[in-house]
Amino acid sequence: MLHDFLFDILLFKTLTEEKLVNLAEICMDEDIAKAILKAAQSSMGMDCSSIDMSNIMSFTKRMVKLAEYRLQVKNALLLRNIRRRLKNASI
Figure 1: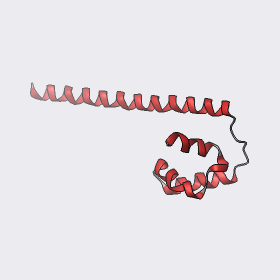
Figure 2: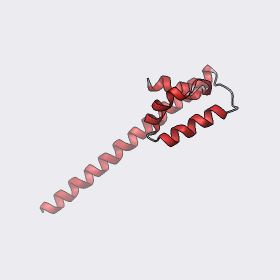
Figure 3: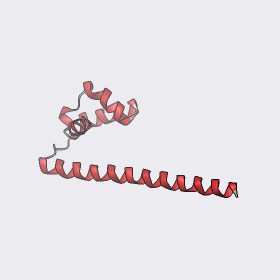
C-alpha cells in the first residue's frame, strides 16, 4: 500500500485531492500534505521512467533501512547507559 502510494506521488499526474488523506497520514501534517499536492499539481517535471523509479525505490529502501538501524543503535546505547547507571547506583 505505502509502496503504491509513493509511486503515485512520484507520478505527479496521479496525485489527486482524493489521496490527500493518505498523504497527510504519511506526512503526519495536513499542511505539509497540501503543500506537496500543490507542488505536484504545478510541477513541470517529467514522469519517471521505470528504470528511474527502480533506482529511486532502491535508494529509498536503503535510506529507510539506515534510519531503522540508526534507531536500533540509539536504543541500544540508551539501554547500555541505563544499565551502567543502575549498576553504579547499586554499588
